[in-house]
Image 1: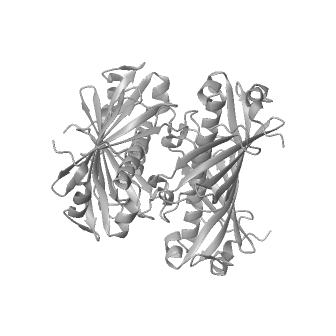
Image 2 (image 1 turned 45 degrees about the vertical axis):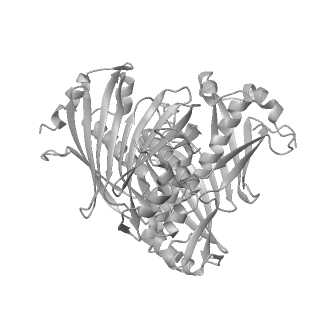
Length: 140
Length: 140
Length: 140
Length: 140
């Protein structure tokens, strides 16, 4: 869901834990949070008008360079949660702030994902993408 | 969603392909279909009133003995699909017929999952579970 | 490892359970067995001289049509196991019999995977592949 | 493999890309690197004498609080790679430096994983674990 009047975030996606994502401690395995935030970025791009597959066909590839994850609490079987996404541009880099909260408001994960844009395989300034993302960029 | 008046199926769950489920041929990797049908069984059990975790705490474990999967067509990025579930009892075995259709009606997967019930770790007739599942059992 | 003098199997691959493959019952999640047997087929094809990527580039795609899995016992943290692979041809279909045993000999999984070969996207008789696989085909 | 005379790393594990880990761009999906480094930590703990399952039974749980991943190049089908692990203690925190190199020496991933130790569910100083890890701690 695109968020129009939120200061920090421009997109939110509600998801639910699936039991196959749990590990032997009955909590969601750490790697699945990367899946959650990747899926949220792709859905955001799609709703913002630039599906990954289309971008790829147009010779543009957003490539993740860096991920920072802070685990605040664990998701468990039956939990519903929301991934919030905020977007900033720093030179050629696009910085996604993606935070997960359990439906009851408990903070679960804080993350920062830094991506660059390759144009025909070469590092670019990402101007085409910046143009599309303009209405969503955080201007803090 | 529990289906009350359907002859073959008693439950349906709509889902959507996530890009991390694709493999290098840009189609959903075969193993993910097992995830889709497992998640559907767990959601069905939950809505039918017997969440897996609760069952487990009560000493009852439904254990998969056999899975047959027929791949009819491939899911791709952006596809939405529905998993339909039908349930039969054959002696001590519970047989789940789980069929996946793309939102446009294209058949994607036909599967049969056979499970038995362990009570305190030993094979049981599964009568407690059969009682709960009674309204949903297929009586063809 | 290609097996030269075995009657039933022509390939064996030793692997080890990774803890992220366990689910909340501390056993390997059912879907991971599909990963194990897929990885074994790909390694077999590679050692037999036809890596999947090469096949794909040559316009040949082996596509799984059917999978039957029988779960005999569960793998757990720390387990080492061997996937054995046997291969038969039935008309245009290639049938992989893949059985998993724990290192101590305990049967874990029996599976049958049926694949067909698409040539430039169309169903073919698979003669090119049959030629390559000839030394490995089971002639029971 | 425990490394006795290396200044930065105390453990190394060789692995190989499995085709089901690739995504639709034919490179290993970002989330799988978390699997690689988690598996390496677990193998290290096991060889250092404290398997996760044993720790857990003794009431000690190492819990990941923070992960930083820097993606330097992509792994592809057929690649073999080595995960190197170094360990430091910073107060109650254990800091794992885990770096991945392709077999030909190309840097693939640099990561820092920070964990704390819960004793019977409460944050502890981790002295028991520090004792076990003593021979492996980096003293830069």
